[in-house]
Length: 420
Length: 166
Figure 1 (cartoon, each protein chain N blue to C red):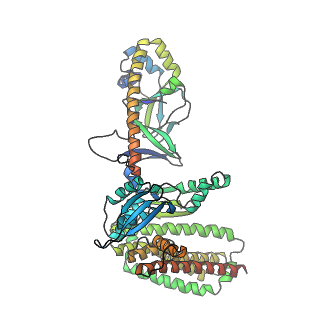
Figure 2: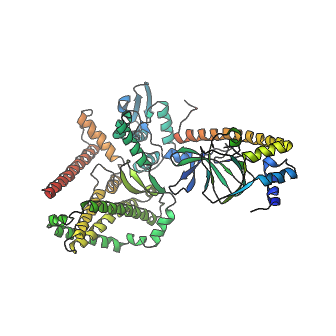
Figure 3: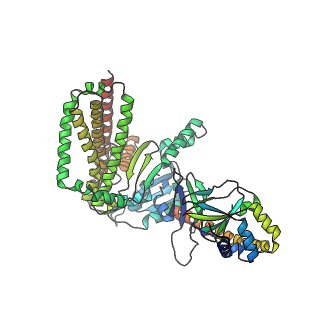
């Protein structure tokens, strides 16, 4: 096929040498119904989504250089393979630590603002340029599972697994033009969620839900046996309802942004890590608002699970024995569990409660810093020197480990109890 | 459906046929077949076999090439008076890009057999046709070079790769 005429009008504009501008690509994205959408993607939009990956830990060495003049240390980063050295400031060291292949430049910038309270627009591109010149950045699969799969591509099963994960990860139904939708949600009743009356009602409902749960607890075995032969149907339905609750959770986050006059950048559905189906909302604009706004935005979504859990427990409590009672009670348990998991910050996962905690502490990279510190202690790489930071790191890891162990023990105990 | 006179008048605005005299234009009009596309409708896909070239009478056409999965790169956008699909008439290769309507569109199709007859019957018109075609091909080559440069610049900017200080 040829394309011609009065000179093709390309999807990209012809290079203009008179004024600097970002390059743009025009991409056509097909939908399942054979329709399509044309999106102009600027190089800057792609750049802020880049996830730089530092070279393997055995390929570099980082040394701290104390300074008596400035009062804050600087760092020397050495590439052990090329013998090249780089001097890093404390801020650059902070960014270097986040170049794990999982953190986008946009997320790094957010973390930087949270930690230092300001942003230097040149620091990230300058650092990346320095690191690229020193060959300290690489492109590798992010997770350990991905690395194992990548190393063993010759095995058909693992190759198929990798392809499946890759395909699922690419499933992303999202929109960036959602601000009017969330604005509408807010105007049509969403604003009520942020009134003292509704906050008190949610609290009361939560307390009453807990009371109902305690009353139901005494007859758990009888309730669970009510599932009868419909366990698989129940499991599918419960998971579908949980997914709907997650969607509602994310919608409330978005409405909270509108409440604080911030912009919802994106809302969508994807497979997290290629495995977990989930909805998500981009709330990064809230970082430009007050701390109260950030805390309320984080907590508001989790309250959805408290309210839904309470309602399910009410239904279970006021329903005579049968499938509906078992279903409602199980949904109640799962919603309350989701509420606790989302709010409890010590679980090695970065849920809403974790974000509130790191915001309050002013340590946006708490999890990765704590794991690196405790990992160093366990490997004997660094001695234990008690300080406020060390106590925080050890405390975080210890509490998280205890929480995970406690949750696992509770889960095993419940399974044993039911099966016996 | 447009009348013969209207179609002949339109053909005078098409660069390929601007040097055609009136009898040649009327002869060409009789060989064209009108084809309508709804917004979003695909005319043909990359890799399809083809026997026709098309003139855009009304509306806008998007030319795209597969990049990955469901994502394609928009190569060009054609409006009234533009033409596309002529390469396959000469080299008989499969279509090199996908064509879809960006808005409701009216096309005029000219197939290989009719083009061959037109060339045989009217050598003077054929010479004018090929002269215009070569000029368009040259413009298209230049535009392709600019597109490659733009995509390379996009890649450099998107990855932050600084080649000047390497």
